Amino acid sequence: MNKIYIKFLMCLVLVLGAGCENDWLDEQSSNQLTAEEQFETIDGFKDALIGSYIGLTAEELYGKDLSWNIVDLLSQQYAALPVQAQYAGIQQFQYETLRSAGQIEASWSGAYNTIANVNLALEMTEKNRSVLGDINYRLIRGELLGLRVFLHFDMMRLFNAGNLENRPELFQEYAIPYVTTFDKEIKPQLSFSETFEMMEADLQESLSLLEEDPVFSEQSDNYYAEVNRDGFYNFREQRMNYFAVKALLARVLQWQGDQEAAGTVAQEIIDDSFAMLIDSDSHPVSTDRILYQEVLFMIDVEGLIDDINPLLRAEGDNANYDALYYTSNYVNETFETENVNVGVPDVRFNTLMQTQARGVVNLKLFQNNMRAENYNQIPLIKLPEMYYIAAEAYAKSNMLDQAVELLNTVRSSRGIIEQIPSDASQEDVLLEVYKEYHKEFLGEGQWFYYLKRNGIAEIPGVFDNTITIDDQEYVLPYPDNEVEFGNRN
View 1 (tube, rainbow, N blue to C red):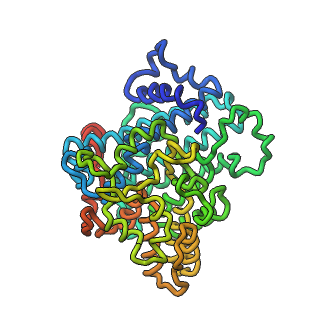
View 2 (view 1 turned 45 degrees about the horizontal axis):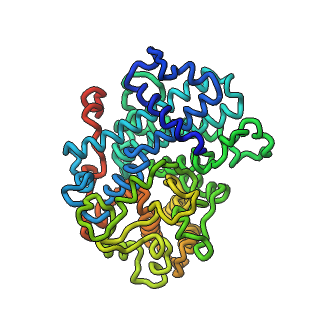
């Protein structure tokens, strides 16, 4: 996002967020903007949109817990935390402890407060459409719709069951509440099927609107000169752009088990999007550790260094109870380092992993020795995931040549020398998809969702043991307030 907005909007998002619990729509204050005042100008709409993105950067959301912290702890990547650690209960699936329950509730509340802000802005795009003009209306509303699905979908992935592809009976069960209005009414839960229909409707409307997106539209730069004179629509990879929304659609379709449709959408993104895989031989991975050119959607987290650097430290100080690091065995097994043509040349291993006294630290998000433009950036959707979605779909359709080609393309971009053989079986290809998800998404939160989506019961666990998990561990419990006052099932 454009950094000139950030300091002002940190205050704005607090105003809008507080409005979810207070009657700020009814009580005009000298210190707060009413909804009508906020959306009387184009700048007000822009501020509200950027405020929603800033909402995503909160620690309880994607600035920490839903990217490199809680979700990665749930997938048992990091070495065992001591009992004194803040998130030890989460790592051990002890969701009912006071501390764990508070952490889970914070993510739920943060997501739905941000959704409320998004819904308010969406309602005003219709009510005050004349303020926006056609281009601003299409781009701002399109981004907001994408954000609404993004947040709801991750709440579904966390708080509802997975493995729908192999459990079609779940489609008739209740899912998380899908909220589309800005009011205080408790929204009823709908079935998985009905909730997916609402998500897909939002995504399709978003894509239709974002055909106006500069990263997709064939219009000349002059077409956007007036609406973008302040640079508001620059840096589209840092926003919910057309291809980010399309990638989100691929995720949603895959979560439902519609592999063919998900693969088709993912292949379109591979073929057409602005993002491209790096060439590890020439790319400066040591200073561009998030591989910026591969990012489809990211957030800018102001002050990320203060949150992450103290935790990505596995030196000899055992008093750093919250340190997040991997055991050497875990890393070596993940990257297959016993094979000198697979693990050793992989830049995800030889450049992004650093061995320290207590274990191995992931440098991907470590805020030091980076290109200036990469500081504070956390990727949320990346191009390699589209390769994996398409490869899995091809493999499950027995189009193994196409699947192998896609996987080998990513592997080569990472520096891996040994290719997956062209005569690999379906089982072997799907195993390579599993391995790639594991290697690629350390520190990004997506490995947990891969495991849950496939209903994988046995995963590598802390202390390098294999642990067995099912819905009891995979499904986070609704916060107590939701159960008591929202009648959640």
